[in-house]
Length: 165
Image (cartoon, rainbow, N blue to C red; front, side, top):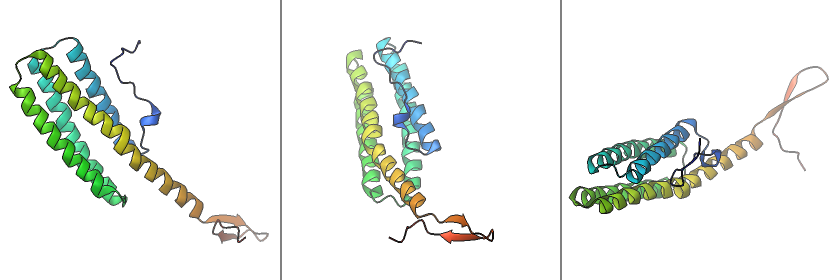
């Protein structure tokens, strides 16, 4: 299947390494592509509004879910990340109000594209920060995990993973 120039293709580079969050992000990319297609095909305002409402409802749930996980993981930048979610939500509400008041299809197409871009930018910038944090945490844990070594008597001894040098 040929990719259209406005279509976003999911790639593993967008994974944050948490299956449930990655699935939510994949769903988001699919929603963005639905919105883009509706705009390109000059769908009516009601269709665009329905797609935007659905995207924003899912984004709000995703933000809540992500914030719960970031707190659980003790992500050091979770307050800033939550603040960014709050800023995005306020921007979405403002743009949606402008969208509802706009009568010209060009204007509401731009509003839809603006919301889409805000969400994509958040995924590519902010969520990649906690992906990197999680990868570092996983790497640190794997280095610190005790390993078992066999002795001549067949008993396991704990080794801390440090060479003692």
